[in-house]
Image (cartoon, rainbow over all chains, first blue to last red; front, side, top):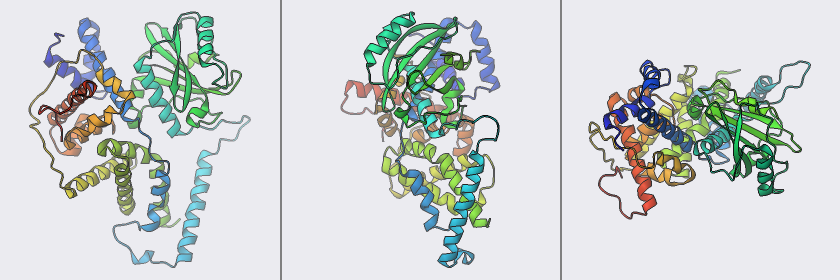
Amino acid sequence: MSFPLDMLARLQELALMPTDDPERMRFVAELVSADEETRACWAAVLEEDNALRIALQRTEPPVDLLEKLQKLPDANTAGKKRSASFSIPWPVAAAAVLGVLAIGGYLIWNVYQPPKGHFVQLPKAPAEIVGRITSLTIADYLAAPPLDVASSDPKTVTASLQARVGDKMPFPVILPAAPTDFHLQGGSILTLGSGLAVYTAWMHNGHRYALFQFPPANFSMPKEFMREEPQPSPAQSALATYRLALWPGKPGGICTWVAIGERSTDHDPFSLSTY
Amino acid sequence: MSGRDSLRVRYEALVQAHAVDLHRFAYRLTGKMDAAQDLVQETFLEAWRSIGSQSEPGKELAWLFSILRHRWAHQRRDSSRRIQTRDDSEQLHQQPSPEAAVLDRMIHTERLQSALDALDPPFRETFLMVFMQGLTCKETADALGVPLGTVLSRVSRAKEAMRKSFRKGKQRSASPSSETMGK
């Protein structure tokens, strides 16, 4: 490969800058007129960085971590030293703890209570589970798994994937009635979380989209939850580049759907949800 | 609600919101699950003891990360581990590997952590601050008190060392060469 080293170093530096950095924005604007090799190298640097960010998140904390941490204050006082004002009899301390729990519970209850209205509002999916699903599905999207069946014919893809998955899923393989400008590429059966998932690849205006259909039990996901599009955060920085949408479905059995596309495109991945 | 009660509520909210992110960071930093859990517990214990002094809304996660990194540095000093650093000013920009996204393939392996473990602590810390904590290179430089160029150089070299480590793992190479930033 003959790509200049100083240019490669520059691309790597630019890729580490925030997306709204003026210098990076100027470079991205100039990319349109850059040669193909530079554009390809820039894409490779971005993809590698994103893959690393996602891979680094792939670790599960111990199940009792939060519980242990929540108990820490019971054995330690707040503040740098034990204050005489906190040397209180245990019945008072116990009452205080109960008070905190009651007040905390009341506050949490109020925060998470759905607004009153004519419709029952579905609960939000737990953030931790959404985070795991986001990391794993974006990783699979980036890895672009080989297709078990490559075809643009929905019937062919559905039949092939259904034959592969058999009765190992509590719902039939379903392909969405996607908008006509979404073109099916094919699909595969993957492992996602603790079970299998149906993966299909789509193209729209030269951009790649991925759709996942899997049992909620793969992630202990609630069967019903409010549709959502997770937003970028320090822990999910890949979402600055890729858009992801989650929603529940009942195509003959309860399942969870996830659609992913590039954030730079105008097309909402939810548009794949019109099944 | 008393002052202590409100501190407890704040503490519990911090645990709920940030414990998992901190544990992931700690695991990548230490390379061991039990060490990561100890580090996170020490971090939250210190956070609880000084929670009254943290009053900047929106800065809680940065504050917790800062405590965690200080606790980690303290542990490393205690264990008297020798930290071998190389000249940060030396630029090392390698050609991209023939396999354009060789790091991508680490996603499905445990080699990522082995490659991280092979980095010198300052390189690993800098790399994780950028790639896991989500800080910009400028913010990382400010937090570590080093020049921006040092951060860029460390990140670049960390990535390259990880590529090499991964390729060596694939080739089942027995001994690390002097070129790696091994401990």
